[in-house]
Length: 157
Image (cartoon, rainbow, N blue to C red; front, side, top):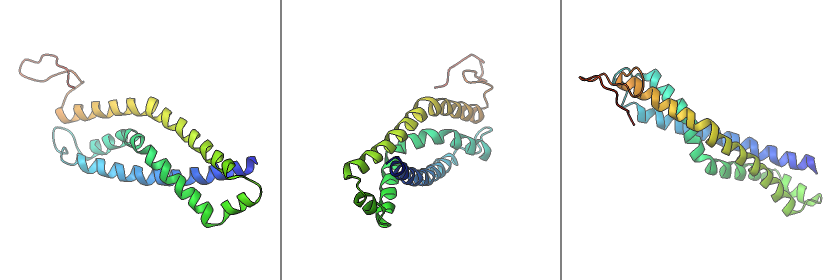
């Protein structure tokens, strides 16, 4: 029984990873294209735009995770059905409920990975991306420092 659970989990996870990479590439490309308007302002160049895009990528992926998991699960289960593997699993004694439970287990593991991405990885990287973009775009040494006429300290939000 554990072997079939693992097999279903592997099929769903593999297709979810493929969909994740496709959506991440598309999201990164769109984010990079949106940054091309700012290239040339201050010290903000192509390298900084790529760096900003890569640092913002976990936040973009986090927003798309529900769609990614849904599409990956459907494709994974569709591949199992296309090759008649679901039929073999059901005819070997597994109930439809048991197959659904294996799918739910895969979804729960992906849910925990999503929570860790959204709580621990995405916020610091997004903050760093915004700081680097502001620093390079406005030629500031650090955030909150102004090179204006009076040279006073000012916070940039």
